Image 1 (tube, rainbow, N blue to C red):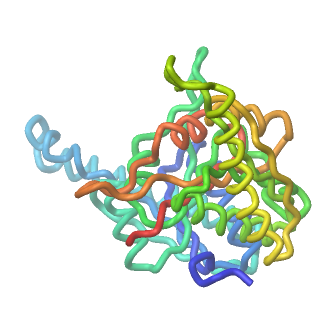
Image 2: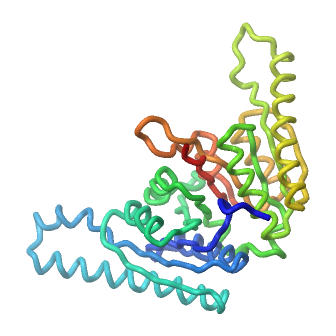
Image 3: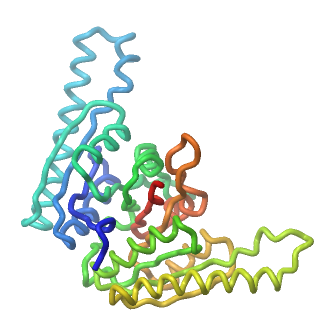
Length: 305
């Protein structure tokens, strides 16, 4: 049975009405339906620019602009609420509109409504670039204390159900931060009746000239096997199927290549913990995976001490 820390009773779907936000909302609705969670749909009227507007526009014009933004926010939440009722008629849906800085309002709403997981989209880029995180999504990832399901545009039409989510990739380095992601990854595999693909990257790309590559690689591989065994034990205790792989190379590239080669349906990965006065830092590996993956990525923050 999952522990209380992996219980999903309330899912938050922030939306600004964009296609990227809809992609995140749809997959968040899938997850809420799979676990029987209530859904909260939130749109934030970004008031950060109103002070500047008041310098160049009169009060009536500023009020008109604010009314237009709030009308857009109302339409955005109603669109997602309608989609939720169509996808899963039994879901309990709550809608809300707030004023302020979007990621701060999202943080506050998470605490006030006791949210367990957030589902958000990223925004697509044109040309040769892949996916760029929207500033709101990136700030949420760096500040909230709960998992965030980040959905790229490529995943908008691929549902997350017990029939379609058959393979979950769970990268691990054996750290405390990774342990939290392992618990969530195994729990989600249990929810979707999926197989866990545990993956450890023995990264030899940063070896110094004076080091012995073979010796260090052997040590890394032993560390990797220990990390994978911890995932196997957690999966076995939950009754989840698991396969483990130790691969060589830079972790982000190894993770993305594995996801493509094995056609995984979701990636569950940890973020770094707090440092001094800062809150959560994504870490370069997680950030690269989130920016470039074609499947939904669940980012799991390390628990606070």
